[in-house]
Amino acid sequence: MISPKPVANGRVDDAARRATGGGRPSFPFSEVKNTFAPEAQLGFIGNIGASNWLWGAKFQYKYLNATTIQSPVVIPQVGQQFPVGGGAPTTLTGNVLIQSSQNTVNHELKLLALVGQSFGNINVYLGGGPALLETKTAVYRAVGFGDVNGQPTDITGAPVNFVGTQWVWGGAGQIGMTYAFASTWFLDFNYTFAMTDKYKNKFEAPFTSTSNGLTYNGIATLTTTQRVTTQAFAVTINKAF
Image (cartoon, rainbow, N blue to C red; front, side, top):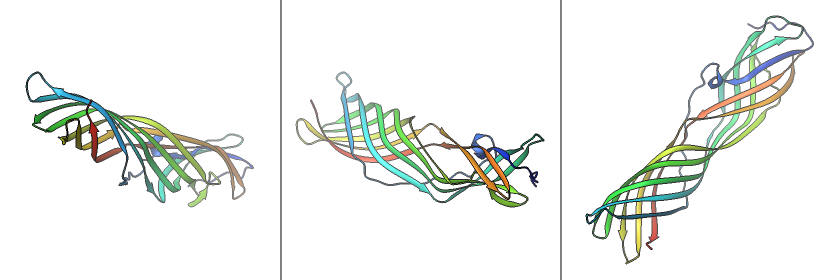
């Protein structure tokens, strides 16, 4: 157990550091969000020579605005306490309590290479290519607790909020069918699966807190590791030029 020295001041580094940044592993969790999303696409498709085989490409944009929420979240944490005036540091373990952890996917862009086959006014195709998604990670009211003499103690003080936005690369695959119902108009039915690479958000905030006559100050660091997958079934009406 930690026995803080009776000093007027103390310092805790990384008291709210999540294990993905180097401490104990936190538990994984996943949430699913279903939503309707507007979509726009632009592309071309044509025959390979005189055969009924097709090739082409497609660019798609989708506005998802989908948010998954995990609430509350309790994750392990680890840090160190450095007494003022010197002395060996002691390890602080405990948990970080987060009122709400939210992950949002706003924009999704895909560039797909297509190959398919024509059957009269019906085309079937497969596609694949890179995907780019804009994601937002939000952590609301995070507090780092350390086990001091067997008692959970609020080390990082008042709850803090973190928000980070970044674009993340991934890949996408698609299977679809088009149906031409007029000379230049056709319907496109497709199913798409997209997955990003794993990506991290690192948040930091200075803190000062007082507990049991001791003052703690330092930097609270929280690191999240995530991956986003999207699945969509889309129906679009298109015009050929």
